[in-house]
Image 1 (cartoon, one colour):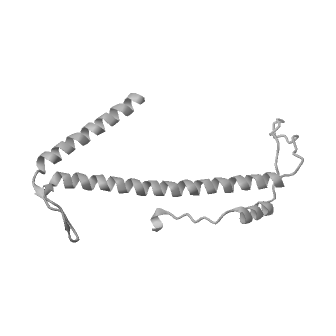
Image 2: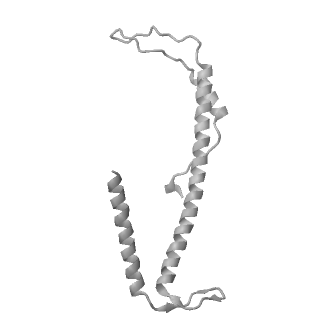
Image 3: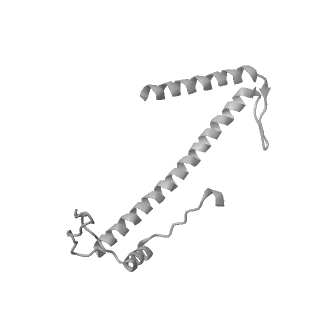
Length: 139
């Protein structure tokens, strides 16, 4: 598997290098970039194109990291909420667990925990943080 990954990245790097060389070879004319009242000295067109790609990659990485932080924070909050709910359910579980419950063929099915739906709903409504999750289709 490691060799396949290495071969993939080597192929991808080689393909990008070939594309960059072709871009540089075909776009040698000079361009002046104007931004509001600022004008640059003439630079090769390939430099403008690759600079734009590089700046776009940097901005996309920044936005990706920001979204990753938001999602990880939400994930941590949800894990805490689940942990709190599990602890609350365990605290409300009956003290005596019946180990004598048998299935139809006579084998023990293990301990049975009985939790009332009202108690579970009360724990959910009081301990769950309000989090809104939206689908990408709704945006």
